[in-house]
Image (cartoon, rainbow, N blue to C red; front, side, top):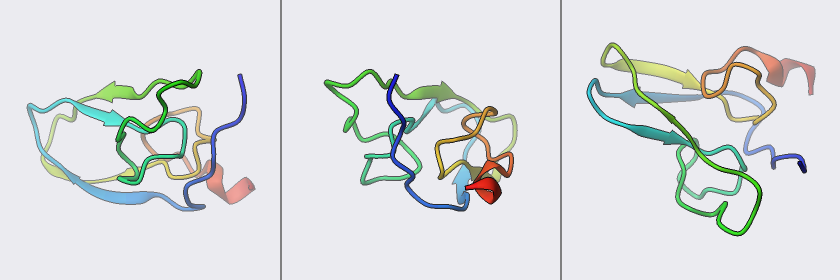
Length: 79
């Protein structure tokens, strides 16, 4: 698998609601970072579907080098 594009070297603080499906961009090409806009089509990347348990701001990974996808785990600090 090829490497994803680093969208930004910091997390995206994103307000998310309970009871909704979200799709995190895994390829780094989405113009709606950190969420998927379909730009991965034709590549080996697929978006990561997730939900949250509480309505609040979450730190979503922007570097695409995170093992804890879609949530930031600080991996961007090592880039």
